[in-house]
Length: 124
Figure 1: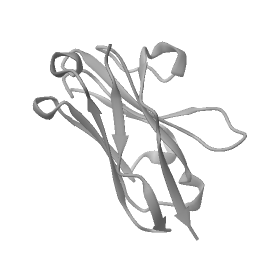
Figure 2: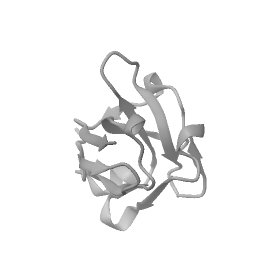
Figure 3: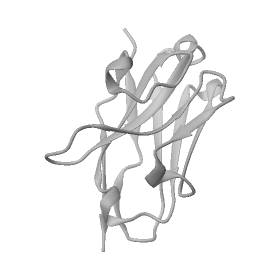
Figure 4: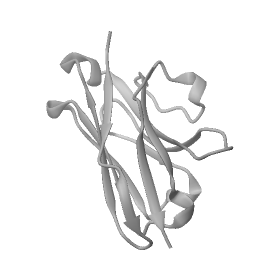
């Protein structure tokens, strides 16, 4: 069984930055899996935020994240990152990382493995 563990969430003022990390418990796992970042706020559906292919060759972002968020990965460290800049109050949510084989998908049901989530709160 593979575990994904997110970290890096917290409270930040609008305009600030956070970097989220997602570490996989099994080294060989992450090398073959595309990783997605999703978020969910109270009363809303879990939505796709960003994704990166298994080799880092391609990324994808929701429109609201383009130009502000950057997804990256370091397979040698079994870790995927989400750098979030120029944060807005509407970015407040629990952020989850998820994994699926090779290629990015934007639908949450396409992902096999999920982390437990990390809270991001952006104050105005």
